Every structure is written in C-alpha cells, then in structure tokens.
Length: 136
Image (tube, rainbow, N blue to C red; front, side, top):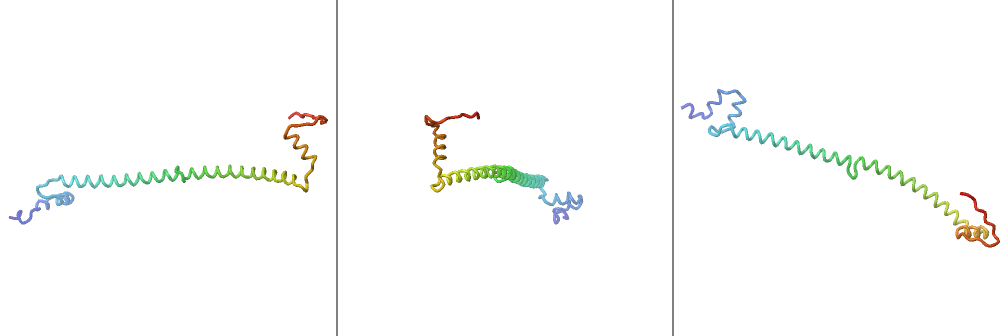
C-alpha cells in the first residue's frame, strides 16, 4: 500500500539529477518527454543566438560598407576635396573673365585693343597688316 499512496516512491532511490528528470514525466510516459523538451530548449537557444549573431553581423556589415557607412564616408570626403579644388579653379577663371569684361566697359574701352582682339578671334587680317606667326 505504500506504493499506492506515494506514486513516485521509486524517485527517492535515484541520484538527485535523475530524480529531478524522473519527476518531470508521468509514470507511464517514460523518458521521451524530457528528451524532447531538452532538445527543443537547446535548439531554441541556439536558434535565438544564431539569429542575434546574424542580425548583428548584418548591421555591422552595412555600417561599414552601406550607403551611409564608413567606406562611403571616406569616398564622400575624397569627392568633396575634388569638388572643392574644382570650385577654386572655376572661381579663378570667373574672376579672370570678370576682369576682361570690365576692361570692355565704355569708360575704359580701347578701340585698338578691341579691333586687335576681334581680328584674332575671327582670324581676319587687312591687306595692309603684317602677320607674323610665332611657333607654339
């Protein structure tokens, strides 16, 4: 009768680890449920860590090589430096053109200079002009 009042009397005779595992199953179920729950728990932990590791790797990779990543930042700095140099050159060219336009103003217009420049640009000469070609 002692076995009828205490259905898990056999548990007291086992080691503590086996006693804990045995107490998780019903007397007729065997060890299958414990193995499945352990396997499911281990697989779920591994899957969780694999997903977290994959997401971390994905975000780290994009932080380095993405459109706004570290490599793109270096490329943007190089491009900014190139465009700054080009802007400086264009500003110098513009100031030169502005000076030339100011020289063509009515107050400072030199008709001989204007005539000479027009002939040079249009590649014209009068019959009385002496043309000396210089090697370039």
